[in-house]
Image 1 (cartoon, helix red, strand yellow):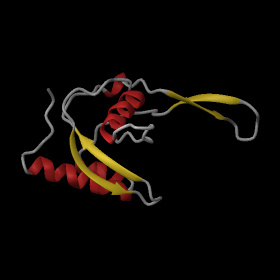
Image 2 (cartoon, rainbow, N blue to C red; image 1 turned 180 degrees about the vertical axis):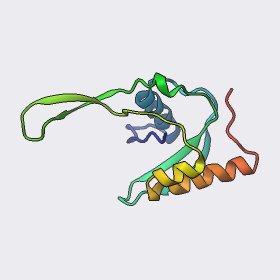
Image 3 (cartoon, rainbow, N blue to C red; image 1 turned 60 degrees about the horizontal axis):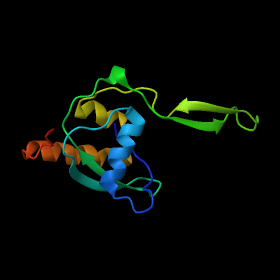
Length: 122
């Protein structure tokens, strides 16, 4: 998963990544994140990526909720989970599923793993 979100005022990118991970997956990340890379998505948004090695039980997903007017222009507000499913993928599977503009994140992860600089959990 690549949790993403806007930085809050005065928030460092790593702190935002840790906060977004917990909000979107319902579990605090355990371990020491390692910086991977910064990519510019096709819409112009910059994404600073980090990685850490750890375990996450996808069945334990407990995402935060967001509210939106639904159906559109109905005047009714409904809540939905920000993340509705979590799954593990190999790097090759991930490359087929990820946004093209985020593929360099997987490339950076693969390079870090090959160099022996894999993120380690504490």
